[in-house]
Image (cartoon, rainbow, N blue to C red; front, side, top):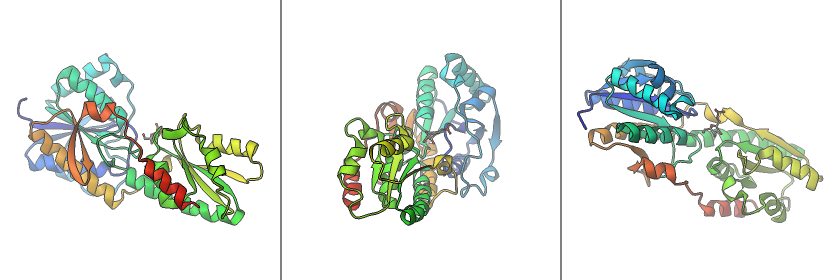
Length: 326
Ligand code: F6P
């Protein structure tokens, strides 16, 4: 691999709070090491169309506290095609970009992996998604902030749930991963979390009712992970209406509110550390890796491992929800 003089930087997929802190860290570390930084707008889409601006250190001033991504983001179907990736490669050659840093979730890393192997091109990925569903890293950028948004919302819903003696199903994001629902339930003191990881093994509603979730309480909060596997919050509310009409049920779908807002201290620190480490890794000659955090240490995980493996849910966490909701 030749010397890396210019790096390209993009965010792709769903935005996540802390992406800006990562953009700042990557940009400033690269400039510190006398590299040029080319910011690519709208993810892989901007790589294909060549929407690129050179960033100086001032371009990333005053953004550490901002949610969203100043680079904008997109979900790009064209990059899934060989023609789209060829156009992206042509842009990189034309712009003299020697390596790429991509910040995003599973889809972003999958695209990076395919592109890197097709063109033998150096890429480093940073895990940026509120879903926390990336293998090889304890946490993803944005997850902690989204959890905090969830508990703030649940705290408010709890007031009205308790005033009316109601059962609330609150749907949270996660795209087939239960991390937000499960840890959101623990952090908000919810009675249960319904998550896709175990949806096919047990009827979680039956479980909930059998455990006597109304034994000591008149109101209840159940967090449901959005997913075709769980069927979402509406599905459970409909079932309760039919099967247990004695309960007064309501549904709240938290939706994209979970993606916004100023990043938490944890996410800012995580993003800053991972961003800095991504440039150091490239300088070290590493490529086609995800930079993550494991037991508070920065780790490099090969794309192949990070993408292929599903990040497991700790079953003990389900136990915690169950025990603490008696
Ligand atoms: O991957 C992040 C995420 O927020 C998922 O939790 C959710 O399923 C999805 O993105 C929503 O995507 P969109 O912004 O395209 O509606």
